[in-house]
Length: 295
Length: 290
Image 1 (cartoon, rainbow over the protein chains, first blue to last red):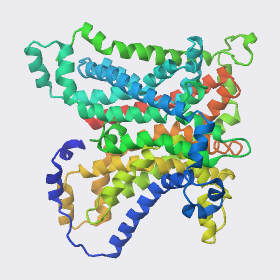
Image 2 (cartoon, chains in turn orange, yellow):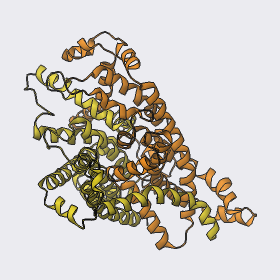
Image 3 (cartoon, chains in turn blue, cyan):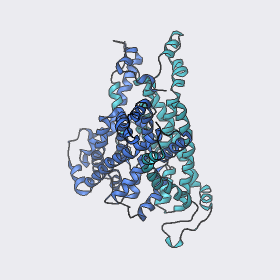
Image 4 (cartoon, one colour):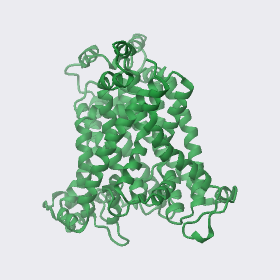
C-alpha cells in the first residue's frame, strides 16, 4: 500500500511538487516556522540539559536556572567512575547488545526465510501470530518464570543467562521483520538459482541474504538499541556481575537524597552508543520501528 | 521455491528451540502457577493447587481494578496525545515551504533512541518541585510552582506527558512516511473541485492514510499498555497508588510481596488483554498488506 510511490527515486518524487520559490511570509507560514523551531527545542532540550547538569558541580545544578551558565567540570564523571562499577556495566551492555544482535540476526533471518517460503498459510500465520505475541507480551508477565528458570539452571546474574533472555526478547521481532524482507525478494531469482543446482541453503546464504542487507541493517540496529535500553529483565535477573547500564541507574536514588550529577553523568555515558549508531544509520530506523509496515 | 521438511527443520529449528524453552515454558508456568497458592517467602507451605482462588482474590481486589483503570487511562491518554501531536507534526514537516524540516526529522529521533529509564530519570530531575528546571522557568515568568510528581493528578499527567514526549516522534515518522507515499491524483482532482484544505485532509488524506494510522495506533497501544521503565523511575507507581498501572501492580505483587500465584493470575489476565488487541492488530496488518 504505502510503498508504491516511495520507491520512486528521491529526485523524481520531489520534482512532482516543486517547492514554491520565495514563497511569501504569510502569518500561517511564520507560525509554522515557529512551530518547527519549538519542536527542535522540545526534542533536544532534555538531552542537552542532562549533559549540562552532568558537567556542572552540585552547588550549581541545585541553584536553579543559573546552572545553564555555570562553569564546566568533570567532577561527576570522576566521582561516578571512582564510586561505582559503571565501566563493568557499560561493558556488559555492549557485550549483550553486540552478541544478541549477531545471534538474533542469524537465527531470525533463517526463520524468516523459512517462513516466507511456507505454502501452508494456516500454519504460517499461526506461527507468525505466536511469534508476534511473544513480542507483544509484557516482559513483567514473563519475569517470574524466567527468574525461577534461570535460578534453577544456576544462571541468575550470569552473562550467559542474560544473553539467553535477550535472544528470546528480540527473536520474535527479528523474525517478523526478516519474514517481510524475504517476502520481497523476487521468487524468479531464487528459482533460477535452484535450477542452476544450488541447494536451498546456498540459495539462502548466497542469493537471498545479500538481497536483504538493508533489512538486516534495519533489524540489527533496532535489536542493538532495544537490548542496550532494556531495563526490566536486567533489574530482576541480575544483581552484580551481569548487571547492565540501565539497571544501575536506580541505585543513585537513595531514600533521602539523589545524587543527580553522578546519576546524569552515568546516564550521559550510557546513552552515547545507541545514539551514535541510531543516528548514523537513521534511515533504517523508521521501517523497523513500524514492524516493516512503512518503507 | 519449495522446501522439504528437512529444510524447514534446518531453518526453523533454532527458533523453535528458543521459543519453546523461553516462551512456551514461561507461559505454561504462569498459567499453572496462577492456579496454585505459592509464596516465595513461605517455601514450607509448598504450592498446593487452589483452583480459581487467585482469580477470585484478584477480581475482588479493588487495587487490581484501580490498576486496570490507571492502565486504561494512561494508555488511552498517551496514545491519543501521541497520535494527535504526531499527525499535526507530520503534516507540518510534509510542507515544502519551511526550513529546518530535514534537521527536525533527525532531531526527533533522539527521544526514540534514548534509554527509556534515562528519560524517566532525567525528567524526574527536571520536574522536581524545588530545583527542577521546569518549575524554575515557571517561577521565573511569575507562575506558581507545580508539584508535578508529588500530587496524584499531576503525577498521572506527568507520566503521560513524558511517555508522549518519547513516542510522538514514532507517530510522526511513520505518518510522514505514509503521507509521502500518497498518490497525488486525488488531491489534484479535489483542488480542481475547489475543496478547502480542511476538507481535503478530512475526506482524502485521512481515509487514504487509514492503514498507516492503524499501525501507529496499535503499536502505540501495546507499548503504552506494558510501559514500566519510565513510571518505575519517575513515580514508582506513586504517590500512593496514583500511577500504579498493571505492570507496576504485577511487579509489586511478584517481586515485593513474592505472592507468585496472585501475580501469575494478574499476568494471565494481562496476556488475555494483549492477545485480544494483538490479534486485531495482526488482522489489520494482513488486510493492509493485501
